[in-house]
Length: 76
Image 1 (cartoon, rainbow, N blue to C red):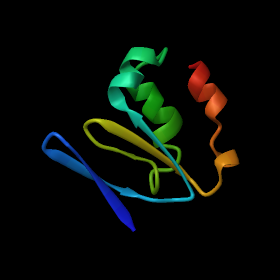
Image 2 (cartoon, one colour):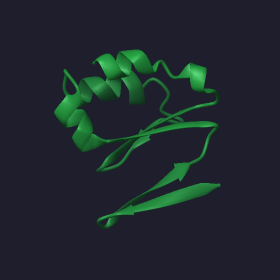
Image 3 (cartoon, helix red, strand yellow):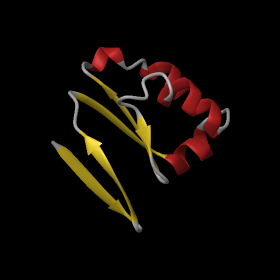
Image 4 (tube, rainbow, N blue to C red):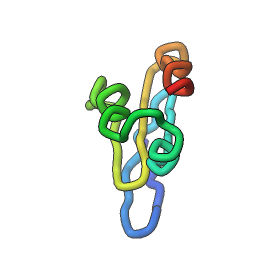
């Protein structure tokens, strides 16, 4: 099952997993201590089969909520 979110003229299919974390790229640019490339290295590139991005969103997926190590994400 895929849910498509329409933002501006671009779309990215969101494949639903048991745990989904969707983050706006502009919030990473504003709140993340390092740059966007470091964020992608830490979170998106670790599981490229499921973790994806488009022009405006990062999508991090997991089978269970305890698999997402969210505290380092919040602290960074």
